[in-house]
Amino acid sequence: MASPVIVAASLLAADFAVLGQEIAAAERGGAELLHVDVMDGHFVPNLSMGPPVVRAVKRVATVPLDVHLMIDNPDQYVEAFIEAGAARVTVHVEVLPHLHRTLHFIRSCGALAGVALNPSTPVGALEEIAGDVDQVLVMSVNPGFGGQTFIPRSESKIRAVRALLDRAGNPAPVSVDGGVDHGNAARIVAAGASILVAGSSIFAGGLAERATRELRAAALQPAAR
Image (tube, rainbow, N blue to C red; front, side, top):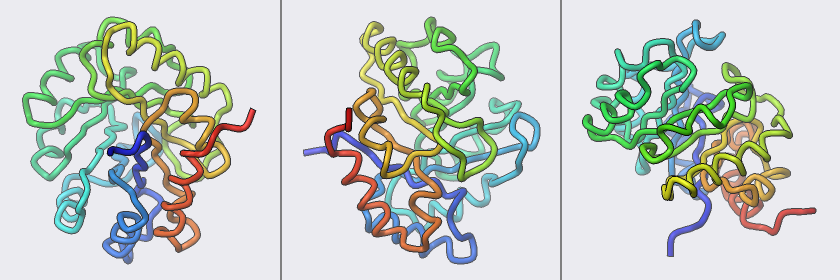
């Protein structure tokens, strides 16, 4: 029976000197996705990985790659990331005036198509495409850097996204990225999320296998009231 919660290990927080080992440890701990943050220094104030890194990760990974494009012109790079090994590609509503077209383009290239919302972006921005998404990523920090603190109001936003998808008859999962840890995982799941993107809480302590396993266990506990 499939787990109701998927842990997506965010490689931005991993030690790139031993990236293959970090990936293997997270997978042993139960990570079912590897989350790859792609940043261009324009849409978000940081630079990170490109298709060559995704291609290298694909060679050693045993779980699918979830590529998050935090870039100004995602249409230009979608094919390259999918060819490199992305199984899921998530783009930001904030930079795409023709979001419907982009989602269908991602699918036509053979990947699942996701949409991300920054903390200040209202859930209503998804109203017209709620039936067309394969996942929605709620950013619970302002994107660009790892190790930030979860924005508490994100819980109500997760509930609103889940309700919007349900009204559209779309069972697509809600994913949450930013400040996800053992202390808030159960509340995030209770709010309606089923994919937890975690970076620092998995990799920062150098014990990724154990941290991944503990995060999953925490997420499956009843949420404290």
